[in-house]
Image 1 (cartoon, helix red, strand yellow):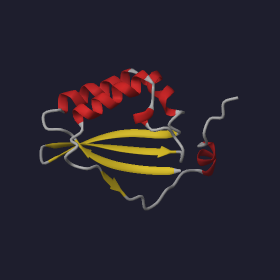
Image 2: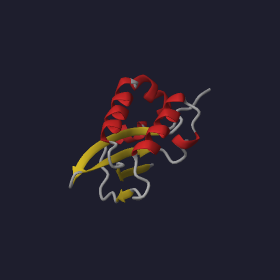
Image 3: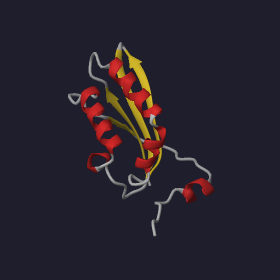
Image 4: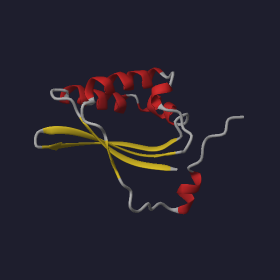
Length: 119
């Protein structure tokens, strides 16, 4: 299982577009959920922070080891998501991965975090 928290810098002047992006994801919750199984994404949360008038987005995720990358997805929502990413995330500042120190989850919840087996 991969547990990640990564900080990304938002492009200058893209705050309104980020707000639109987050609203889009919230308004399309059912479509978002459809994309999670192929990615083996068990938890994905996006946080926003402003430091010295610079916007940052933080992605927290708990994901299986062999999930499909959003960049290789054919889902319409993932294509939209990648387009927003390219428009909003400042690629001149590499994402910063934070290091997990402790992982705490009830055993029954962790046991349920397994890839969906389709018959």
